[in-house]
Length: 337
Image (cartoon, rainbow, N blue to C red; front, side, top):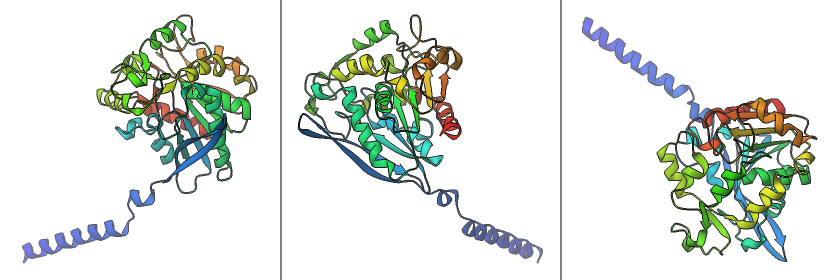
């Protein structure tokens, strides 16, 4: 009888636990995935129409949207990285925090139109990003522009020219680049039409990409690198135009465009970014040293903040410490936008 009584109690306990699981909603159902949909903005250049495309992901109740522009030889995958997404996927981290995201492909890359590369300048890219922002303005109370590397130069041009955003996050860019290391990096770039991975894409001669297996040297050294991440980075690489490269350095980084930005600015760099830090370039030892030289370039911004990721190379979001960078952006957004 005692054994039967114990068995009856155990069965009752199991039934109670199962019933509780059925009645209490799961975390997944309490936090539904954002609704994602394609977006497109058109721009006319020399009587020809081209399209900047991307993806808008909107969590329920989102009132602020982050427009993300990737760097050269990258497409949307930089921000929406398809590997160990809990670490490297910036877009999903922002969506989980309640922000809508609009991740675009620069013209010539990803899903966007591919004009003749001689037409693809940083100024043209900035105009296309402006068109994207205008399409989003009616749906969101605040728009924040986030760029990486050449995407940051494009963001400076857009925000300085049109003054239509509520915040600007610039990653992997300063006004004092390391010219020696930049010149060396350019030797690891070649025409996409000669690249074994991209040669079948029909690119004209001045669309460029990284040489095979050189992304570690270009964008990640001397920081810690996950070999799996690096393999995906190689698999998802894209292009930039030669003119866009020169335009970004010569126009996007040189004043007065940054001085025209009238929204709060966050500057984020890797402490060991060899393209923008080091001897003769920006002192990236700390946020204080970065602001010491950079803040003067944003004279009309109401606030300029900085974040430095110690020991990290050029690609902050593809380093194992990326969640700390993502959290720094979220903290800044909650304070300044």
